[in-house]
Amino acid sequence: MTTLSEFGSWVQERLFFLDYAPVIFTSAHSGFNMERLLEVVRYVAAQLKQKIPTSILNRTLQDAIERRQPVSSRGHRLKFFYATQTKLAPPTFLLFVNREDLFAPAYNKYLSDQIRAAFGYEGCPVVLVPKARPKKVESVKTRSQARKQANAQR
Image (cartoon, rainbow, N blue to C red; front, side, top):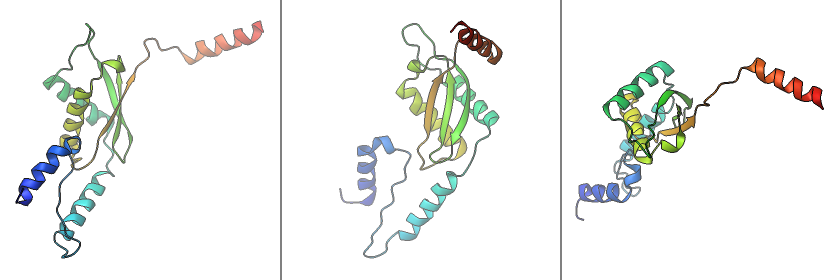
C-alpha cells in the first residue's frame, strides 16, 4: 500500500462492520487533517441529537420494506406493525413485529442503512430492536378483575 486511498480501502475492507464510519487520516506530529477530524466529529455529534417523529419514521420504513421485502423463513413472513425512536445516542429504534426471530441480521443491516441514508445518520451506528407484538392484548380492566378473583380465592 503506497497511497492513503489504498490504505483507506484496506481499512474499510477489514472493518466492514463499520462501513458507515468515515475514515480520516491525521498526524499528531504535523497536525495534518486535525481540523478535518474535528469537523467530522462535530458533524456526527450534531446528528446524534435529532429526534425522528414516529410518523415520518414509519413512512420511511414502509417505503424501504416495499422496495425490498424481508426473506420468508420456514414458511413464515416477517410483518412490521410500527416503529418508534427510543434513544438518541446512538439512535435506537424499537420495531414492533409479528415475530422477532424472523428479523434476520442481513435485513437489520438493510433497514439500518435505509434509516441512515434517509435521516442523515452518516458516521453513526443505528440500532434496531425488534420486539414481538403480543398476539392478544388483554384489557387493563380484565387483568384487574382476574387479580381480584385470584386474591378472593386465597
